Image (cartoon, rainbow, N blue to C red):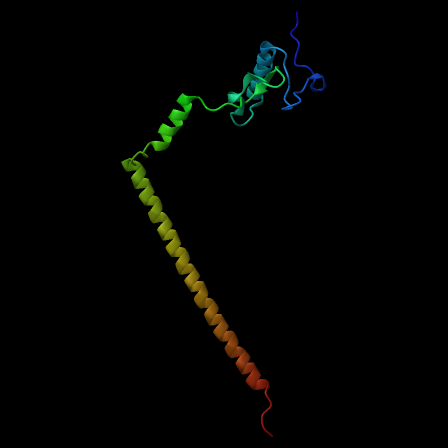
Length: 148
């Protein structure tokens, strides 16, 4: 006997509270979950949200849904996150330290070169402004009629 695929979206019953698809049994929800995970793996969907999907029972409609359970993190996972947050960062290895120093020196040299370039450009602009002002003054003096 041939296995049937998922029902068309128009035939799926939606939860009036959450809007998610309702499944009458846990087994039907698990089949739908396997379909979601398989489709995500086959299509190469970015991210890992599908890894945290699970089957849960709706409190309002007493049906089964596929989704992210609205429960708190388990105690062991919360403790692990707190331990990781409290850990001190590892000291740099000699190679990492050397690369970091080389990068800092390279950046300092780049900034020094840029500062010298901009200082030269500012001097060129000041000199161009001086020449322009001199030219304007000479033109104004030449076009000014003298006393008669």
